Length: 399
Image 1 (cartoon, rainbow, N blue to C red):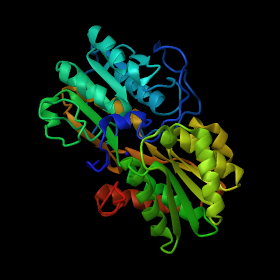
Image 2: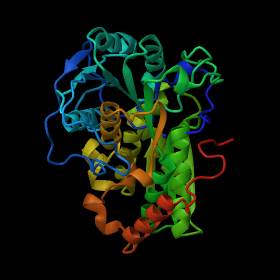
Image 3: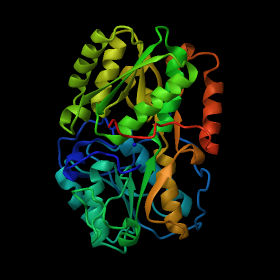
Image 4: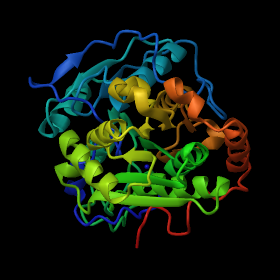
């Protein structure tokens, strides 16, 4: 959610962004814990089929030890933590190694010690979940050049000339050379947003739709909303899209304040009474946005995963969700490492490799326009062949 257009001045500021704008788990009160795999769910968020386009082959059996360090929250959050871990499980199963072990830190202060625990135990592959862990993962990859690190949504990887975390974002170093066993899977949020915009345009009765992002300096958030607007206008060129951002910084209000998100959305809707579809790109704060949409008797759009599953409270008014194929991306990375074909650096997941999508309408599928799925299929084809532009020239930036 990757050009270096994040617009940040302090690397540490991103430590509060929840899984690149999408997390919404409830933090555990106790210390970090080694977690058991989440129980199987009969209604798990839809993921793209495993073994997407270009998925590397891997040996039938492997001795790789795989560890997963999630972000704070829970392992079964039906969001970034759970589906990244499911990807590690799927990758381990595909290469014939033991089930991965997960550590769930209780706070950001425990990121380094959680990673070090796996390093000390001689784990071969360590998956770290979310942009919050980017700086810590860069440091660990620098300090442990013989260990593979798979970052989820930690792109673009930015390092100093020495291969260390770069607090200035000058990105003087070549991460692929300096950190040859660190790769970050990231996603084309504008494409997922574009698809959500198609659904929104078909559902609106007023001709005005909205979007609320957590912060204006979160490039993935901006990309989602930029794609959303273009997708909606591809269906109805005269549609009005009213975008707003809760903050202009990375304070907790951006992604970690559900009550605040509801209040913000209530005020937004009071000022924009014609909005009848509202897209949230604000993590836990965004769950509050969905709460406000439901209370206002309009439809909402979720983000990152199928929020019909990750946030059931919004189910009655959820039109769709713009999604990322977290499970597929992590599984592919592990198979590539085992098969010897993994390459360091940023690895993009987009429509071409089934990396993005849009979820079903579930309880509100009757609000989708009759031709919506056909329009989605046509858009996906254009994304795959490169003929469809889903983001403006300054993609990910409002400047």
